[in-house]
Image 1 (cartoon, rainbow over the protein chains, first blue to last red):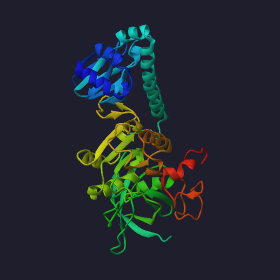
Image 2: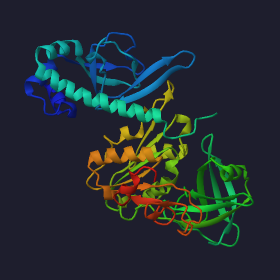
Image 3: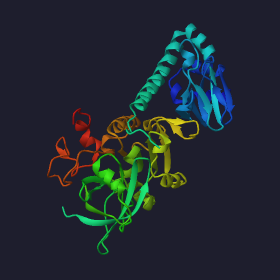
Length: 155
Length: 271
């Protein structure tokens, strides 16, 4: 637990968060490993967690009939992923799969949602941090949609 | 303004619409020197002349490599040329990447799509003078895995311990094991010292705009960010005015500018 506390405390995402809240997060956290190719979550499942990647790489993908799986984003060491636990209906909208052996800290979002309702200061701190992540993702998605490199690929 | 005659020694298909031509002088033992980032005007006889960046090794003087995308009449005709065919060459023209100024610094190279072509000479140059530089990081983004340029070079560079190479694509299918996401996402965690680095950026203007923002977020000064601009160049020597960009001509004061000197124009629309 001490190790988890240190890792969470040093993560830039949680910089400036009061110790009591870090301790509370540690209470909701667990170390989990996924083998290469293993699903971390799948579209439509309940979204009750979010993840800090300690080691490895994760791909976020969606399935398109007749085309197969399309990778939307990859996330690597130090990244946080998963914010569907924060907004109703608390369902994953995409699949997430480990590209290689991946070790993460999984945080129980369901437990955290309850804590945030009980303590709005904590709720504000968490929302403030996740809104930055959501805004960053939105900006990156817009850039991807702009298709800045031009010509479409032909074979 | 004189045109030298060169023969095509080798043609290379890089992607479905991008190709490289290796050229050698037709007459005598003439060698060709250029600085990384400069371009030549290439003339296809009976068709026309276009500016193409030099993508080869600046430390090798006996041949010239140019990489371009097939986008118009001249490049379409250029693609049809065969080994032994003749091309007219004028140049080299324009400003260059600050490889000398970067001595003693970390170097971060950010390329998007075909923007890797004018930056490849920088990588060749740095690798042949590797001891003079700090950490060297290459961040390269393309649309899909099929659009990746210079695959053999990238494989070699990824195997080196003295060059950190990261690739990302905007979209991919399940068989791709690399990164997916825009190239700017690689900047946040790239291992370089923002207070002692030179950043060299080349790609579509919108990609460069967002790259500059990310570099600024890391703390890189505007005077240490270099970008390469593209405009409609005709004469190559700052006479005709076709490539005017604010108070400068891209063919003469550019194509490589410091962001500090260009930002007022760069951020202005309709320029």
